[in-house]
Length: 138
Image (cartoon, rainbow, N blue to C red; front, top):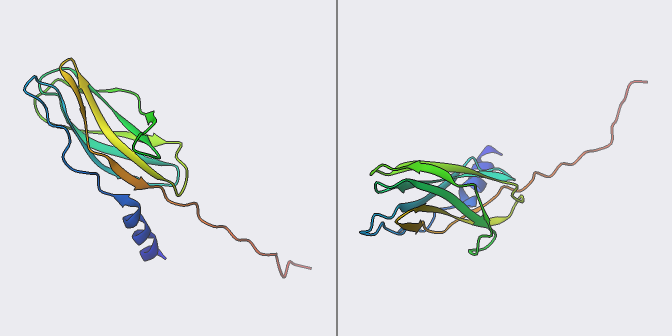
């Protein structure tokens, strides 16, 4: 049973497309979409990296059941450093057994960078079967 569950989890997460938008010479941010973690039937944690390239930068994740996304997380600060920093956000309220697209978006005064599209499938709700009670004390 555990091996089957691990196999389902391995099939449920598809690595995002590599090759996030690179930062331009203008100092715009760089965003790279990472994998999802903590996959369940109704939520995941989306991850990635942001390089602010020396400018105050914020990031958010776009997500939805198609590459048009439709939902997004609240913007969060990524600082103003010149090195990539790991970022994450919870995506919740998802439907069990559904396939979703997601990507990381970083913005600063110099521009916007969109990471590659990632795809994941939430876990299906387990089937619960109950039987009739038997041999109840007399």
